[in-house]
Every structure is written in structure tokens, then in C-alpha cells.
Image (tube, rainbow, N blue to C red; front, side, top):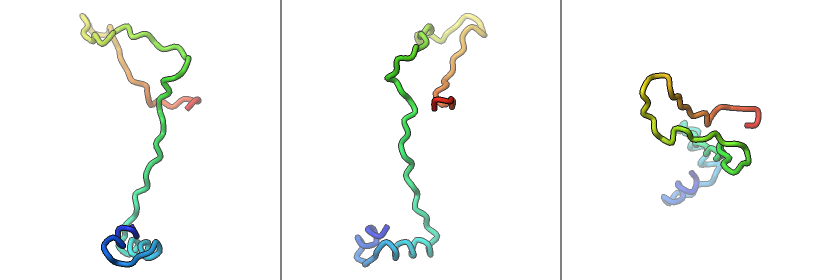
Length: 76
């Protein structure tokens, strides 16, 4: 924020920028750290793709699909 204020020709340091932000009730949005959620390079067994993207069926209750990417486990 101080760099942005100085870019407009007004001398400003970090402390002055913090004071201005506090007076204006402005809070900096923190960047979230990128977290890897998928490990594709493993030697664990992978379930076979028996549907092969053919989702049309003759009757109900023959095929169920799901995505369990974000279920927490003991391993993370």
C-alpha cells in the first residue's frame, strides 16, 4: 500500500500506510498458500474405469458415480 501511495507522488512509509489503512477501516486480504490436494504419482491400486464414460443405462439403480476428492483421511 505504501508503494502505491508513493507512486502517486506522496511520500509514505509502511507505518504511515498502516495508519491510513486503519483510519479508513481497510484490511489487507492475505494470500492463501497453495495446497496440493492430489498425488497422482503413487504406487497404490487405482479402481478400473468400468463405465468408460458411457453413463446411459437401461434401468435405475444400475450405476452410481461419485467424486471423493475432498474427503479427509488419516493420511491427509
